[in-house]
Amino acid sequence: MDLKEKIDKNNLPAHVAIIMDGNGRWAKKKGNQRIFGHKNGVKAVRDTVEGAGELGVQYLTLYAFSTENWNRPKKEVDALMTLLITTINSETDTLLKNNVRLLTIGDTEGLPKNVKEKLNAVIEKTANNTGLKLVLALNYSARWEIVNAVKNILTDSKKTDINIEKINNEYFEGYLNTKDIPDPDLLIRTSGEFRISNFLIWQIAYTELYFTDVLWPDFRREDLYNAIINYQQRERRFGKISEQLI
Image (cartoon, rainbow, N blue to C red; front, side):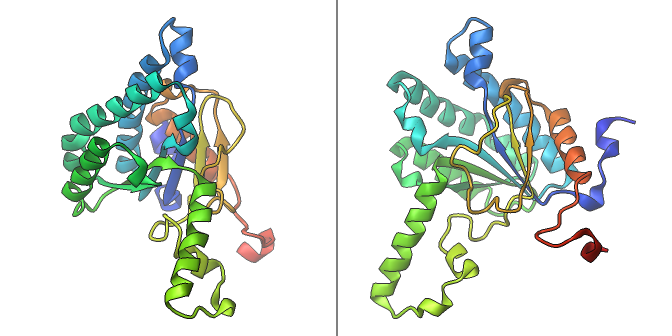
């Protein structure tokens, strides 16, 4: 029995989020510059997206570029933006063929104009696709998202009276970038690091976390299958006790 056959299709995580880490280390091990790792990471993205779609995962969110990544050397940032455009161009037909809808979260207005234009074009082209929703987190950080939500609530409060008693979890979530996206059931981080790195902090309150030593360029659908198999062996209680779940 191969890994895919071990997966219970009735217990799939509806939303898988991935912190794609290890591109730089992968390149360094091979005696190349960091961008070489990022370029090879595209292969991992393609295989993971296809694998998730074939299984029936509804949402796949990839942490592609954080607000903190602007602090990297300009040469690397410029190369990443160029790679992003190249990848969007080369993968659009594959997204359409596989019925994948592209979405984004993050401060995309802060991206270069040519990147925004390419992204918006593909988002529009795939808008009617009904399969996997592929969410790219671009120029994103969880702290930025939360602060931005508070700012928008305060802005709206100036336009209309807001009853403070009505501000609860559901109300606040309506101001997050992910307001129309369910919270992740499973968060995967590659490369052996054990941290969240400012990613979906609000949304992962009850998410199952899975860490693997595999560097992102080496990650393939079989690694996704292993993570999902591990996820399916866990008991998700959401604050309750086991007996309440029977």
